[in-house]
Image (cartoon, rainbow, N blue to C red; front, side):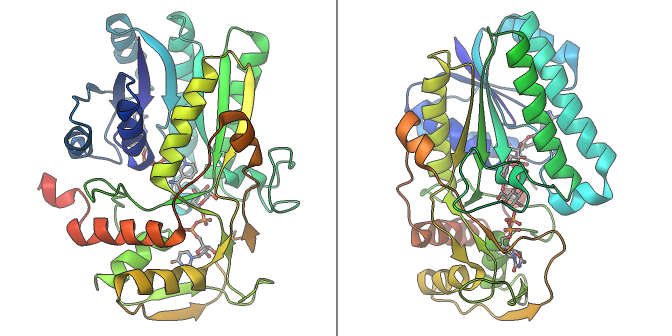
Length: 341
Ligand SMILES: NC(=O)c1ccc[n+]([C@@H]2O[C@H](COP(=O)([O-])OP(=O)(O)OC[C@H]3O[C@@H](n4cnc5c(N)ncnc54)[C@H](O)[C@@H]3O)[C@@H](O)[C@H]2O)c1
Ligand SMILES: O=c1ccn([C@@H]2O[C@H](COP(=O)(O)OP(=O)(O)O[C@H]3O[C@H](CO)[C@@H](O)[C@H](O)[C@H]3O)[C@@H](O)[C@H]2O)c(=O)[nH]1
């Protein structure tokens, strides 16, 4: 029996494949490469020394998915596939609802037909909206979500919870990620954004290699220790290990469970910039501009439930995250694009 990894060539998926293979699991990746490259999987193979079987397919394509399910035997699906850019979701909402919602519905339909009823789903801290309190526990009420991407995540959670309620043979773990950054320590795999990065650390990394002139800091008038936004940055390899632990838990028939995957610590934009400067030795020019619409002041996890129940906690520091992002950026200034041109 293998583990189906949808979106396994992407940023978080590829790091998770590494940790799953290192833990002895056999995986099969399905990805349409709409936001990734097969090169990522070749590099995973270099890291683990194991072959990564994959199918190029769109999870909305039922006949392609059925063909895969007829050939393979899956015990569980870890479902990463989907679109994730907040800004793009505002300008292309139809594409986001179609890919994220229809994709998940089609996947669930094929899974139930072939009696694979264990699912680990990539959700996000974005479902808490402006959180009612910090550190955020899983009981924190969902908040008002201000963009279509976030709404698709919240809807997918609800769809999966309803499916599990209606058919208790399903086991569903919803993982709410905080802010994944960093890259595998080898420098072989990492985040490969298309165009100008929308997220903080990939943007800083491109300023550091002088592809971008300066970092725009979105507001220094928040009620935080230095006025800039605070987030819970988590190393992508720690996050990936969280999936291995969730997989162990899903095999114990938990029904429906939700876990925050974060470090429990919040860092401000200025603290991240200073840390990146320290580990890289490169000054990062910055300019403070007005707040970005939709941003919140503070967001960090109470990661206690995952620690107690999944026996998982993060091991890497902010300096590790910045150093690993820097190593990946230096070795792959254009992400995977160079390897594919
Ligand atoms: N990166 C983050 O900050 C973050 C935070 C919270 C949640 N998430 C969620 O985690 C998941 C993975 O995120 P990521 O950062 O690795 O993104 P990513 O874009 O790097 O990976 C997603 C992968 O899914 C593939 N894909 C997209 N639509 C598909 C479809 N219809 N059929 C098959 N493959 C498809 C893409 O080609 C890509 O390889 C996403 O669901 C995302 O919403 C990400
Ligand atoms: O060029 C930039 C980019 C970001 N920021 C600030 O940096 C912080 C982090 O921003 P970003 O890296 O864009 O992350 P978030 O806005 O927190 O959102 C990320 O983290 C969420 C989970 O917490 C996911 O749901 C989202 O998909 C993902 O983009 C915020 O205070 C931003 O205002 C800047 O000042 N300048």
